[in-house]
Amino acid sequence: MKFKIEALTIVFAKEMIEKWTYDSPYSAYDYVNESEELLDMSNWGRTRFAVLGDDKLIGELTVEFFEPEDETSEDDGYVTPETVLSNPSGIYELWMGWGLKPTLCGQGIGNQFVSACIAFAIDRYSYKGHFVYCAVAESNLRASKLYRSMDFKVFNRLVTEENGEEKVILQMKKAL
Image 1: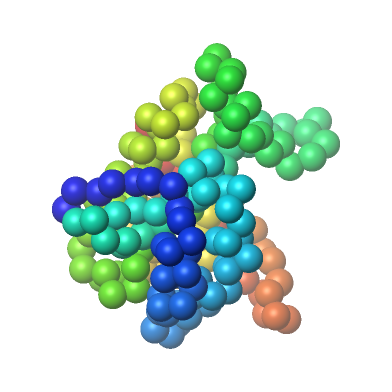
Image 2 (image 1 turned 180 degrees about the vertical axis):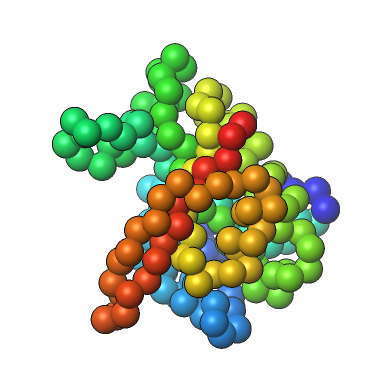
């Protein structure tokens, strides 16, 4: 499948919010839970993108940049896409998130989809870092298995609390 990545639009955002529901145990990833972020038009084409296959919406991509962390970091190190683009010699961490349309999950296109998203972000932002980063709930076995098969390695485990329950988040990175 050939992928095309473009700015998110209201039509795409509404489709995801209204129609994309995942079967249990993945229903926590339903886009209705992210409606506020998806409808934030200031991020469309900056950090939020629609992924098309055969001219139909099949996924979404989120891109964020951070200064490399060290002991002296006073904030989260977030860097705007504009800063990255205006500072071609800067080295930043590229964190990515993506989601595939529920009816396409388990169909064997995950590797191609994630690879296309990574290639797009590297090209769009002239990314010069040595790794691409992502985070995934440890309980999301389907996604973590895919990432491991693509040579993402766990480098940190975060324990958080969500709705009174402990949740483990795996931070992963892939060498470029």
